Image (cartoon, rainbow, N blue to C red):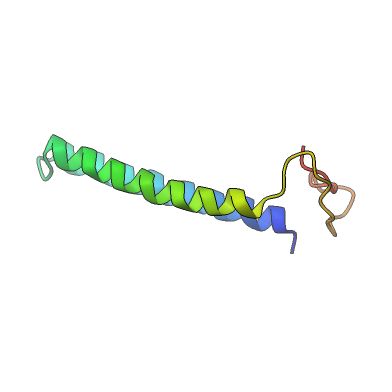
Length: 83
């Protein structure tokens, strides 16, 4: 499977998880289950965890001007180079 596709799919999953976690924090705040301080700590915790994942992905991805050899068909948006 194309490495770029796998990384993009994982990034989308991470974003959706973060979005769900933040949505739940807002609901808890609105329902009075969390204080403002707890809400802000929750956001900080979620973003800190996401930045660690992003750092790992960035280290695994070659620079944008580096050719990437893929086995993608010609119709695929990943034609062998980062766009």
